[in-house]
Image (cartoon, rainbow, N blue to C red):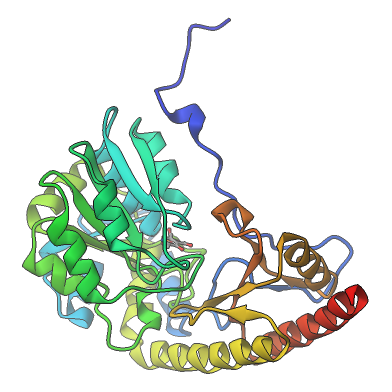
Length: 365
Ligand SMILES: Cc1ncc(COP(=O)(O)O)c(C=O)c1O
């Protein structure tokens, strides 16, 4: 038996499951399993990539000054309080690495994003799962679960895979009530889909225990590029920068993300179209007897009668070339998470689910 052993927690990690992209034997497939923007990124991204591609013999800057300035301009933030990462996943990783370790507790919620317990295990900390109420983060339950070992509380607002959201007043109450050594991470991967919502930036500015994370992978349509960012008090940014590799983002990532960010008209178009098709899809599924919670994101969580029905619906959708996400691993065996695609994709999903429900429920009657 080898004496070489991994660090505590590493072998507890259940590997992250990405969304499927292929169905054997089916062509004309639509991938609705990873909450990607069906329209892709702003056309300005292609130009930025062409220009950045000319200088590939040059190392990128280490401070991401251009991208941080652009983020600060667009969101009205202080560039010194911003850190950029390889997806927001990397920023979340910096946070776990910097602020939790063996003996510490990291709180996440019942249906919370699966990276949170992975990151806790990766640093040898103990992930603590707290119940939600009706698929929604419950601040009182989180506060009741805090101990003097709590170092980080991760919540996504809006949340994945439920699509639900809690009011900013509740986030404030949570930050206010945390033990002195704990940080609240407000994961804003889906914040751009919510009207008039700052993702918690204001809270970051008024407190010393809140970090907000954001991504270019969702509304900006750049999941394949891997760029995210965080906003935090300066003392925290200073800590996070110490564990960040100096060249974590390359020139292509930096230029493309900045081009996407500055195209506000494209972003508005994507937000409006997502809201329109999301409402349409929720109503269409309700018409077929399949309920969804109100969603604040670019996906819906469709709830079936039981796990068997959800699995059968998934198989039927697959047979029609529609790949959605099973979420039993998130404690939601009765549900399927369906990304809001373009209008033809949404119509295909609604039609296929209607067909399935007719066959399945009437067959059972
Ligand atoms: C809630 C949440 N946070 C963070 C991420 C990570 O996004 P990325 O690393 O692509 O920025 C995702 C991706 O699905 C997510 O759903």
